[in-house]
Amino acid sequence: MAGLTTLRGELRQVPSTRNDVGRTLLDIATGTLLFLAGAATGLVCGFTVAWFAWVEQTGTLGMVLAYAGAASYVVMLFVGCRLGAVGMDGRVGAFLPAAGWILATLAVATFNTGGDVVFGRQIVNYVVLYGGVFVVAAAVITAPIGPRVPRRASGGKDLTTSSGV
Image 1 (tube, rainbow, N blue to C red):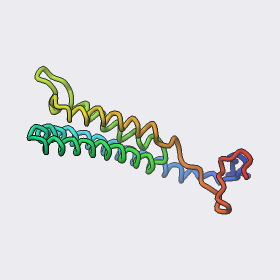
Image 2: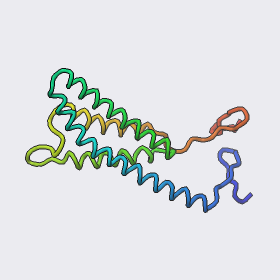
Image 3: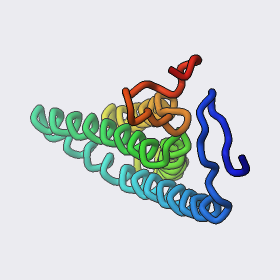
C-alpha cells in the first residue's frame, strides 16, 4: 500500500514528489503576486483617499460621493482578500494581500512634523484607513483554514464524518 494513506477511514492517493515541488513553486509565485497586488493596492489607496478628502469638501454631493467611494473601496478590499483565500485554498491567500496592503498603507501614512504624508485629517481618510484594517483582518479571520475536503461522487456524503458513511 505504498503511496496510499488514510483520512478518517478513506484511502487517498498521495501525490508524487514532482507534483509537490510544482505545487510549492506555484504557491510561492501566487503568494508573491498576491502580496505585491496588496502592496500596489495600498499605494493606490493612499492617493485615492486624498482625492476622496478633496471631494468631501465640495459640498453635500461631494460628501456623499466620498463616503460611497470609501465604503466601496473597503468592500472591494475585503472581497479581494477573500478571493485570495479561495484561490490559494486557505488563510494564507487572504493574509498575503492583507499584509501587503497594510504595509504599503502604513508607509504612505507615515507621520512627519506637518502631519501625514498623504492622509489628511478628514473623516473619510479614517474610514478607509481603519475600515480597511478592520476588513482585511476580518477577511483573514473568516477565511477557511485549509483546503476543502472533497465530497464523494456517490451520494454526496461528506468525508469528514466520523463513521465515514
